[in-house]
Image 1 (cartoon, rainbow, N blue to C red):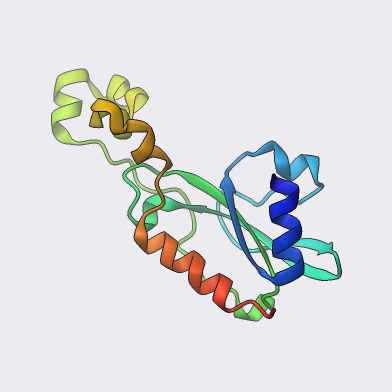
Image 2 (image 1 turned 90 degrees about the vertical axis):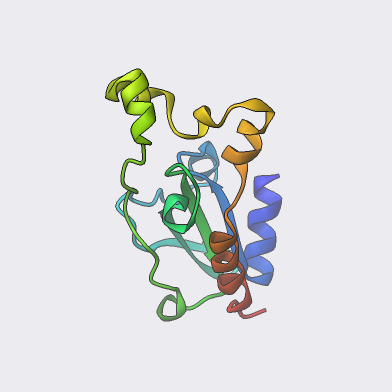
Length: 143
């Protein structure tokens, strides 16, 4: 599936969002982006220049950091947006630290404390602000 999606992005232009540290980058010889951020040249696939980066969705409204790798094609380097780079700050509610202590609260994480059946959906969700950013990148691609 990744190869088909990357091929479509390379052919038509756009952006592919994937979990950070995905094995797909190694499997397809895409340079891994640094966690600190910044756009990295990802080579040329199917005659299309590509870029990759690591961005944390926590900067865009996700309750946890959620490191994400982006693969972009069909957008000139000068037209790629400056994103909010680097890890997000630790966001542990005070009640969590009081109840479990800092170390355990950090291990458990904010999303795990949501409870109920929605944990996975919340963890997997893309915040609207990040979705809009991805759409703006895709719209700027030359088709």
